[in-house]
Length: 339
Ligand code: ATP
Image: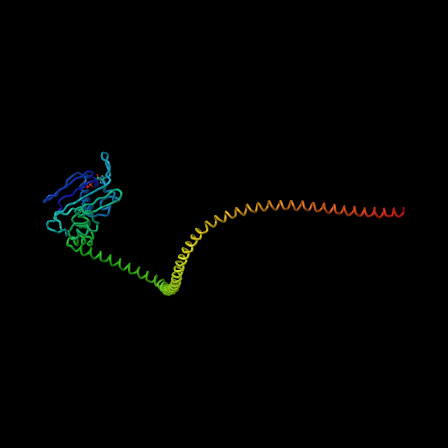
């Protein structure tokens, strides 16, 4: 496994895209102080997943993005990709060449890629376990670090040797398993708490469930009873309906017979009506005539009455005249006798 090249764009002092090819022999990067040599090593650390801004000699991760100079405006993102020759298959992936890339935007959005596939940081780390390359690997030794290692604590040195001898992978896996175990224990404790909390609720709900079941059975019974009642009612109504339908049919037939008869009668009545009208007009004529005759008769009766009255008067006059005549006669006789 060999580092083949590194491409840097917008990382620290590298505002523009640069590509460094590492040939099979020793490659040295030479430059004056502050020209950016250490930035190349930082780029390697960063692309392999370094999370500490301090290790990258900044105060926050955004500091790795080119921040601009008097002549160049700042960049909005930084990207580094590093390519390994994997023809000896030391990196456990089925590719002869492996390219790891990391991209960071000022917004904080960050991505990792293995051979252009978007991956998580964890996958990048796991890929390089046991290869001697990594964030904490011995393959990148910064300025003053050798002195630090020699003068440092034996545990720190041990960590470096472990990484080199391949134990770190097992340690990593052990750590991961321990983390999972702690998580599982935590979950267990939480579950126990939840179980205890829910026990009372469970008892309450069980009671409720029994009540609900009883309720459901009762409801079902009611439904059955209602159904049987409805069924009886339905039968009764249905038989009535059939009867009514038959009666209605008969009535309809009768009605149509009667209608026909009525039509016949109407036809027969028509000339009679005409005759009646004629007779009525004749009767009206007769009545008028009768009225005339009656009034004439009344006139005659009135005249007769007047004549009768006159006759009575004359008769009375006549009688009075006779009386007077008798009186005169008796007077005359008297006178005669006196004479
Ligand atoms: P030395 O030999 O002194 O250690 P060096 O060659 O390793 O120096 P570096 O430390 O890699 O140089 O680079 C430092 C330079 O990088 C400084 O000029 C600094 O201004 C520049 N630099 C660092 N971060 C950024 C950034 N985000 N944007 C622009 N320039 C940056």
